[in-house]
Image (cartoon, rainbow, N blue to C red; front, top):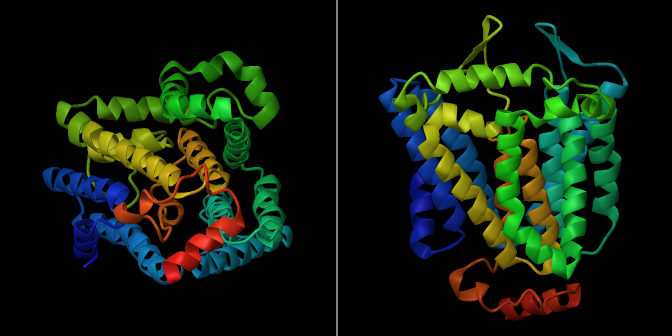
Length: 361
C-alpha cells in the first residue's frame, strides 16, 4: 500500500522528486537482500516504517501543515522533557549493562532534538512566536548539554555556523556551491585519511575523546575490510538485517558508526549514490519551497545532519525521515505552484499570510 501511494503521488507530481530516490534506495536494498538471501522481514519492516512516516506527514500536511507542526512540536517537547526528567531523577533502565532512557540510549537524544528544531524552523513560516524556540532551548539544547552528546553538540555548532554564513548574501552563494562537496571531503578526511589523529589534543580538550573517537576508527577499518571482501559486496552490499550489524570487531558484530559506510555495507556503492542523490534533492526542494528566512536555517540543519552522520547512524531511525518529510511538506510544493513564489520577494509573515489567503480563495 505504501509503495502504491508513492507511485500515485509520483504520477500526480506532488512532493515526489526527492522521495522517488528514497523509494529507489529501498528497492536497491531489496535487490541486495534477495541476492544475499537476507531477511525480507527486516527489509519490509524498515521500508514500511520509514516510508510510512513520510506517507503520514504528507497525507496530514495536505490538510493542515501548520497543525502537523504544532503537534510535532508539542509531542517532541514532551518526549524530551520526560527523557531529561528521567535522567535528572536518576531513573534509567539498565539493560545488559547499558543505561536506557525514555528515548533510548543517551546518544539517541540527538534524533529527537533535530526533529524538534526542524519543526520549530518550519513553524516560523506561520508564526513568529518565541514559545517553540524557548521550548527547544529548554528541553532540546539542554538535553544535549546534560547528556554530553558530543555528536549532537557538534551538529548544533555546525548548524549555527552555516546558518550565520547563509545570512551574508555574498557568502550564501559560495556555501550553496561547496556545501556537499565539503561534506564529502570531511567524510574522506575523517574516515579514510584520519585527519583527527593529527588533532588529538584538540579532540581530547573539546570532546574528552581520543583520536579513535571511542573506537570508531577501528570499527571503520573493520567495515572497510568487510566491504573489500568481494566486488558484489562493494556494488550491492549485504542487504537488510535486524540492525545492519555487519562489522566484526572485538568479537561482536557492530554497525559501522558512519552513516555512509553503513549504506555501502547495506546497499553497496549503488545504494550510496542513490542515497546521496536523495539528500541532494531534499536540499534543492527546500531551497525552492521556502523564503530565505526559513530555507537557509533548514538548509543549515540538513548540512549539519550530513556532517554528524560521519560518526553516527541516523537512517535506521524514524526521526530522520520525519525531519526530511517536514522539510518538503509545504502546501505549495507542486510543479504548478512552485514557480509562483520568488524567495527574494517573500520575506515576512504578512506576505506569506497573503499567499495562504490567495490559495484558500
